[in-house]
Length: 350
Image 1: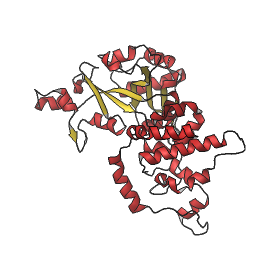
Image 2 (image 1 turned 90 degrees about the vertical axis):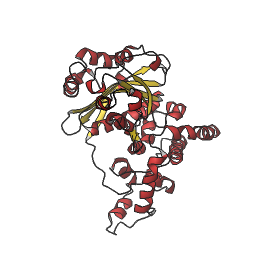
Image 3 (image 1 turned 180 degrees about the vertical axis):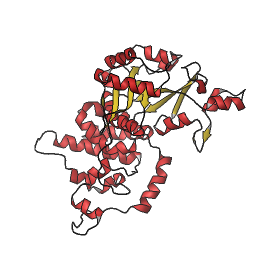
């Protein structure tokens, strides 16, 4: 227990830097939270007729903030405090199969009010579900590739097969729970932590040999026809990434606004365009999208990175920190089931 306390103390600062939500972004949520929410009572009358009281009477708050679409608010310190509280509880009950995690204790704990939904919603069934891909998904993968990429950009059947065979634990797909249609796919591969110094193009990145020891992943491709699919991918893969000891994900992004900007700034540098900001966000629409997904660090700009007319064939290598990955020794010591249980309530913050 002393070692756990020392690890918690030494990693809180690291976790604060790696959480995908920053303090500035949370300031508005905290203010709205104070205005719209009051601390919920510890007990509630089942006969009051109020939706909140009836839900609390059924002790279903955990399901609400796990599955409900409401916004949440948190601070890095409270998130880390929650994580270590869950780990401590898991270790306390690990030796006795008769002791099950007490969800009522967690749901009614005042220290977890940062996870309370601003507006209570009934739990709804997920519209997208993610899982690891297999070769049986090849027809759906090819259909998605043809829809979202040009002929000179789309992966062939041989490319897709090679990606799945090489790293089946890093090939993820999201599917509609009603129709079974593929909504999104994600392919990753391990790369050296300093791989950017060794490559010039996207193709170079895909051909790098996998290192024995690395904490970095490279996003070969992310294809999506529905934002819900991307959300499902991230929520599914997060606990697997933590359990695997991964710390950072790199990806190459086009900059589709570069061509129009160059028309008005023929002598302008690409780096100047990439660094432009509007309301503290990247001016380029694609960089702004990836910024909202946690890829906020611009590592380098690569001319001739991949064929993309609006980007003038330029690519920007971005890096995103996997939230809470500073606790890598803790996650690797836990079972995947325990990692999922701890992180599931926090997936709304991704």
